[in-house]
Image 1 (spheres, rainbow, N blue to C red):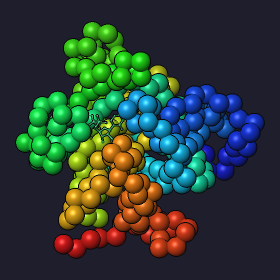
Image 2: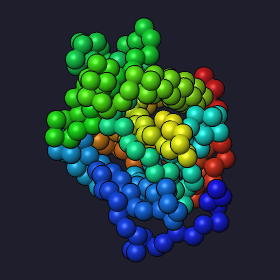
Image 3: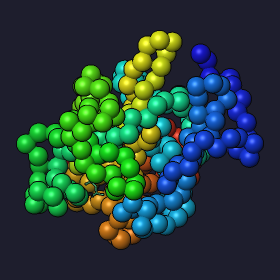
Length: 265
Ligand code: UDP
């Protein structure tokens, strides 16, 4: 279907489907579509810490668009159709699988705390972890046993999710390495997309500095949400830096999409 010529209802008249911590989902212009709206809210520690950071939503919309469009282009299926405006994108409606899929390349955050591995230690190989998406329970880590026993996903779906996770990790690691950034870890979500009678798992939600750990290769400076979690300040500047290096934001105000800027070491 060609969505490029579709009109969409102004925000005020749209039906709100779901409101999360950093995003709102509205009904889309066509059946099977939704509009994903990026808010400026930053939350951490299960929303116990909350702040509005003006401009964050705009940056995450652009960065996530960039990542998802490229994933689509290399044949990694995602829910993303196209960006609509500064804060919104048109997506396919999927049935979200209630798992946060974390891929780690370098020890940090909860892995470092749980296993006593110093932050910054390169892991022997990329590690995939699953967390059950449930705010009341604080998103507990779960194993494949829990996932299949409780019916959150089938063994075949877990295989599909893991191969998607590896492909996304390989793509993102290379993308960020090319602009002088180390992809320490990231979280992704997946959903079931039905096309007639066929169902496939696609990457959903967002991939942005809110959901990745991104460290400058040379200085190890954090360019991600840890700036907020750890009260380091300068979150907007860090996200802008990521966008600029990816060639999304030019030196001026208007995002231009000039392509990645290669950083020579
Ligand atoms: N993450 C996320 N949402 C969550 C939890 C984690 O996007 O609800 C991301 C986080 O930004 C990091 C990765 O998943 O890139 C691994 O997070 P970790 O388990 O270390 O989280 P922490 O306990 O440090 O928040």
